[in-house]
Length: 614
Image (cartoon, rainbow, N blue to C red; front, side, top):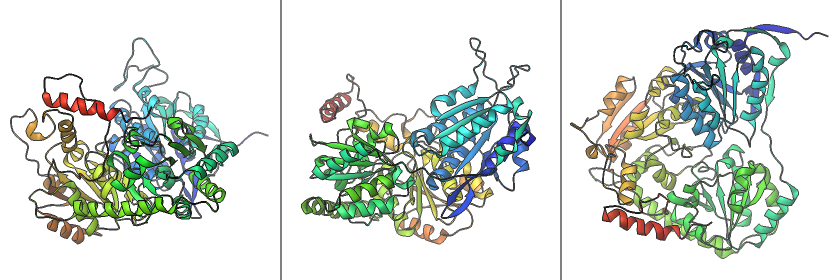
């Protein structure tokens, strides 16, 4: 029997295939692709562009303003959707494609799904070298898109139209796999995009993808449960995997039943409501005193859905109990085994519920839970003091955070880089899963506004507030235009400290002279005096500059629910930071220097390193 076929170009097959992929959200079958962000050029406009036009009513195409920005928006969409839905991004070859590499690395580090479809050179090579083609005179197979390989979970270059069938099937497996999840790059040779092939109609049959919930291995599970029962001072570190597994309720039940305090990574923050008595808040370098004091004493860390990066572990100097055991509950074995831990390779929700059942009747000593609750009470007092409003001419980041929290307490907060993530990790009071959206795995400056767009597209009912520094805003602000074009209004609070204040503080802390971070310390003839409100208004946003915290709160209250993106600018102190909480971070200091301050910092650095676990 001959299979029924349909003759399509390779690009048309890609578009039709994407339309056919579905998932189930809240009991409803919906498209798994939320849309395609596109910037067209000669490497994709004729092939992919024509194909997307044909399905525009089923698979919306959104025009980006910058390839990196549109990819950030797509990634934020996936994160805000808890990886249940995601987007694709297409660009031309050369600079268009390479602009997406930073975003690919961001998605790779953070285990987030995005399908990247950059154009590529001609497979037939007849017109070589084409415009924007990178040539390697020692390797005729090289193209600029090869740089996607180390930052893609799966990479393929499509040089024949039929190759797209196994490539797309493999792409979907990776994009939906809890353990392998990350960016997929299908590099589409521009001549092959336009070539036709007789594709089997079965390739375009609707397919529904639902999350795989991995069950734990019996021996690993027994070892993990036994270790927990023996522990006297256990803590839980909740990572992003808790949210992606939709395991918040299971985590709360487990913690309450067994009396175990919980601390959150940047990706895991909002897994528990801020007000929950066992939520100790942030942990590590940007941790609360409540979390870090417990972590120093802990004899067992149940690390749920976290990759245990250095900000979480205080560069592995935070945990000071020599008898410490780490139990890594993670879908990815690479993460579950970190630091010689006991691996428990399983879905977060499944693993927590199974452990809960296995530990029936067991709880930690009441004194440990009570100490945690006292520590939280003390921390909340310090946090309230840091965020309280004053009449300071230049408020601190913490005080601006307090103003935003008071004015928009139910907002979904988006941020990425600079000093703000550390302050927000400590101080923001998230009360619902996903209401705190930080890109801090790659700490990518410029993610913020594009990320806010992605969150708003994924969660249109949310009040999305983006907090961004002037440095990040200058790096990538063009997707402000996209928020207006797409009717996806967000509120941007822009904190202007006249430079890279976070790195300036780090420079000072490591003994360096103030140099090349704050604008006044750069090589310059004249300072720019940037009018950020005027700039945002020129791109179509409602914009204003406020002169005090009271004005900021009033502006936030006034613009809540606005139908157009709002940008509110406030000048801030580049040096002030929250002293409470926190932990040492390993940033190497020069062994020798002409500066006495550097030599002193090196002495402190060598002393601090002695606490690192090996």
